[in-house]
Image (cartoon, rainbow over all chains, first blue to last red; front, side, top):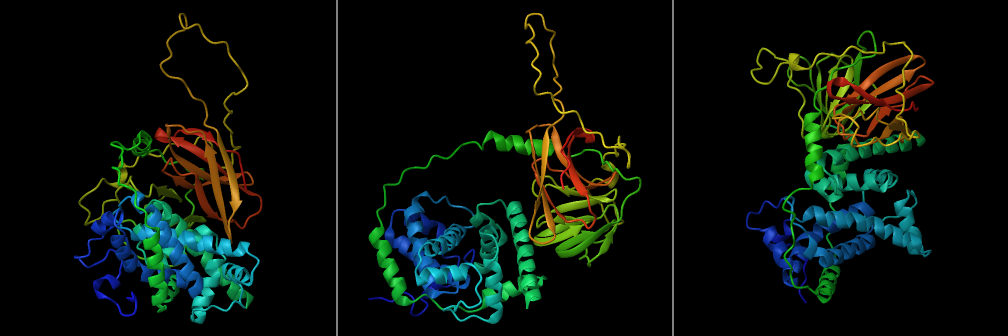
Length: 204
Length: 296
């Protein structure tokens, strides 16, 4: 069985926003992916590392990140025929799905009264005792705790802009907002996060 | 990124994360392949024209650019900018610069808040992407997108753009500072007049729509901020909004929003007690088309 992610394979692994590789014609690939599972699989392999990284930073849990990735690409497969090409490419659309799936994942988990659900709740709502499965620095823990305390809308704005590394236009597109409206949401989100961090600092 | 939080977020993003597990990636790809049931493609119908409402909105914004400046105070207040983040100011006749905290802004100062930035001017919170101008001791906020601010005043090196004198002359404030505030009579809603006989009634080319009805609400945001939001009946003659702070029997215009589509403004919670706000609808030439309830 072939292993997709053991070594980086060629140019497809070098994913970045607005893909600098001139030979990578994402638009053509998306067009084919609407009717061809091999093309969709190529798109999947292209974006999985980036979506996984986003979800892992956001949740701090490999298990949750894999759940988010599965749900994201399954939703993308179901809806790729309806995807309307935009200048930012497919990345804002995929990150929008991933952001929504992150929130949905926590909500699903929270509804179950299992240990796993309790862990998910602890991640969504700040709990200093929650033990993440992805080793992160203290600052990352602090930032994620502050981010988790914000409203879902603010969480999405900051996560898309800073954790998904989308530029301003792409993040706005991922939020389904015009750039000026996204700028407003983002600046409010950042202010709310600053206040949250300051509040936690004062509590210590 | 000049802001500490943005630096921390950038560092978080740069922290290496584990690559997706190879077995997981292969399993998910197999699952996706098994789920693939592509329907035959159908040509998507694309609208040939943008919705008329968008065209109308753009036209309304472009038409409602200028209206006269109104100031309810006898002399301009000092305008101070605090906590600027990723913000650029241009003092009259000077080059753009990064402001320091608590800098005083004279009339004619232009403010550009970058997409990720924010600043507080005279208690008014400017969000990312905002362009504003200090005029007559208050902040004027311009549409973020289509309508540019008026050109800066001529400087020794400036060669293009209209001079600041092209701004319309201020309209005298009908209600001087300290005078009792006059609330426009609300539009009659209960009186039913008999319908005129269409065969004998004189032609009436213009109908006065009456004062616009505005309902203002104030919401506490996290921290030291208030969010003023207002509802207003949709009217094409509104070109912007004026936000006025009431303190005792004093009133002061704190912001002029030159964008009829805006319906909210974030302000810092004032230190003084018994402070309220009102919002006025402004039309062409600075005419007051209506005034909200006082809320605070």
